[in-house]
Image 1 (cartoon, rainbow, N blue to C red):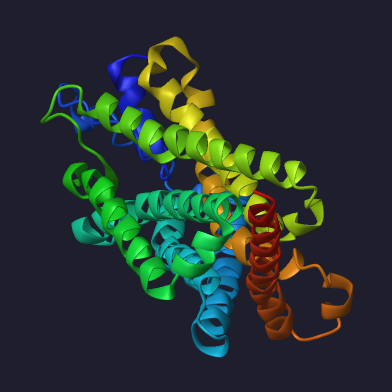
Image 2 (cartoon, one colour; image 1 turned 180 degrees about the horizontal axis):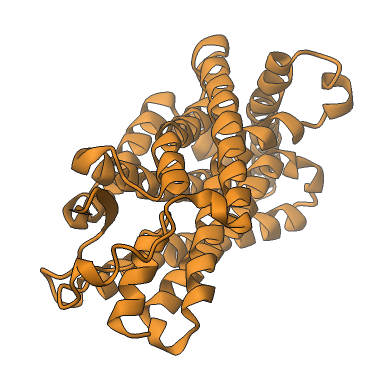
Length: 350
């Protein structure tokens, strides 16, 4: 892909977080190339509709989770985890109207601050979500391996502190979006994009660090935690006690499926000259939309992954949500009590 093609794709791709602006190419070469609106392409219209649905479902679904877990339920360690996840998803969904408008008009009208903030919110959501999933997986692993210790030391205060640290790290890792995001205008057209021209290899370093720190390493830790959990449950013949991990497993699988395509296209874009520019352009649009969908799927999983779904389906949405979120805490308490008694019996034999 030559420089003209790269810049053309950058202007034509309103949802792309990765194409860089080549200062050797003048804006006059490309300013008339992008389509004036999204409505001339069927694929763009379809993605626009999907993003609007994600916006509506994400705000309403996560709003319900925040209301139930934050105000209607007793505060527990489990509600602390899921409340934080819901807040992260809600913030990201609240920024979608800006990106949807950008997609529809092919023109960024919201200024430099919102250009930086919307990109920052996307990666803050990505990092905070995966870090929270790692924390919950580690918490489950410790509860299985050391049930007595976990029952005595797992507190809401410690959970809140860990969540706060996860948010601080997520904010720090999302700062590059604020540093490199930029807006360029010419003849009435504005584009929000990543400007990596001031630092050599910054594009590659940021892309790889997001892949490794926000995807590969977290999932490696999660894989180890779940392997330990499964082996422990099978060893103790406590397969019925795996119910607390059902919602968590669904959240992890959903995050993996939603974010994997995005990271794949990030790597492909680093070597864009070896691939069809149209494939990369469309791939980024679709993969970014799929990643965005993760924000509205989480509250749906909370509602429909409960053990008593058939019975709770007859109840209100609020009752189903509370049942799904509260069920895990109740089952975990029963599991810890049962594990403690098993450990106690084992110690008497010794």
